[in-house]
Amino acid sequence: MKKFINRKQELDFLEKQYREQKSSLVVIYGRRRIGKTALIKKFIEDKPAIYFLASEEVESQNIEYFKRAVSSFLKNPLIEKLSGISWDDIFDILVKTKTDKKMVIVFDEFQNLCKTNPAFASILQRIWDEKLKSGNFMLILCGSLISMMQEYALSYSSPLYGRRTGQIKLKQFSFKEAREFFPDASDDEFIWIYSVVGGVPKYLEMFKYEGDIYKAIEENILSRQSFLYEEPLFLLEKEVHEIGSYFSIIKSIALGNHKLSQIAQSLSVPQTKLTKYLNTLIELDIIRREVPITEEYPEKSKRGLYFINDNFINFWFKFVYPYREQLELDNIEYVIENIRSKIVASHISYVYEEVCKQILSDLIRSKKMDVQVDKIGKWWDGKSEIDIVGIGRSMRHVVFGECKYSQNMVDIDVFFDLKKKAENVKVFPDQKEFYILFSKAGFSERLLEYAEEEKNLVLIEFP
Image 1 (cartoon, rainbow, N blue to C red):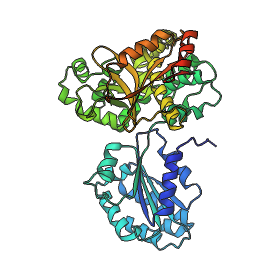
Image 2 (spheres, helix red, strand yellow):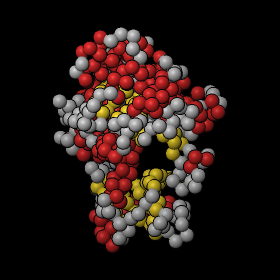
Image 3 (spheres, rainbow, N blue to C red):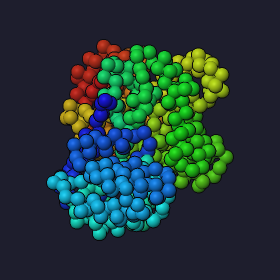
Image 4 (cartoon, rainbow, N blue to C red):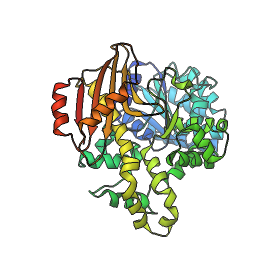
């Protein structure tokens, strides 16, 4: 039996909905492979529940499958033999069923029902209003096609708008959460694994690691028979139309084009044509838009940069897709050597920065660092950039940080360089400044001695 990893916050939310609401309607959505079904099955394992996985077949077939699920749940084979019945008829049977506990009804891949019958959301809205709302039911609608889930279950124009009592958009695991998949790996080994696979549960589950990261990459990603070899293609085919446009945008960002103007120029298209594609990719948690942390109105800022937010997809577009011809010819060694020569400088060092932000957040949350911040990001202008900047408005705290994933110890000059760059970042007139340095290889003696005296400087050797 597979071990269920984390999702404590989401499970607590579902349990609260189950216990405290008379009847509840919860929408769970997120991209494929993110663990929606695993979350639901964990939640319902000790409850009276009907789990129904909708197919892309015609509506009559889905009614047939749902009828069978209800027949099995009620242990009444006569229900399965009923013919010519509707959704209403099946729900009438459920409403008349006497149970001591609240009944959970799950519609997984809910968007498939709306594809085959666009009126299904209206049908379900009426069933909820007339049959389920006043009963003792919890209805869970789950789906992976985000655009359709928003259209039919979440948006203002949806028939179900105003009926839901809660929603969960499931996201990737953080570094700390994903760590549970590889308890025997060292922290440094896991930085490499996380850099390659990212925080998508299915990718973590499928990546088999036995101590040699390059062998693991070869067997789990570069092998043409492996699950992950063509996964980005399958993901985009399922999630979006116009796959070529999305593919080209992700490829452009992976090549180092982070400004909107650069992406547009690389694809020879006007910037205005990219907006809808970029917004969809952000919704899918595949890319993110960053602005300098000091921007007062981030959504209006013209300084936004786009980055791939999924470590595996970033790795794939950098190190797999450009060498597909070599891989099709089984010239794997050539691709592995290319990865060896570039992976630290062009990939892992950037992931390390994101991991350090998460570590800083944990240090502050656990009060191991006496600082208060509301948000953590990075800062840049035309001349320089700072890896980490945290801002806390209530106490006027500002944290400046640098992250060094290299074989060389960090010396005191790195701290003084950081202080000099920090002079350009004035968030508050009377701000209280703190500094944090992360290093893979540790710190020089003179920096360690200096940090003993400089109380606003924290040194973190990680891993």
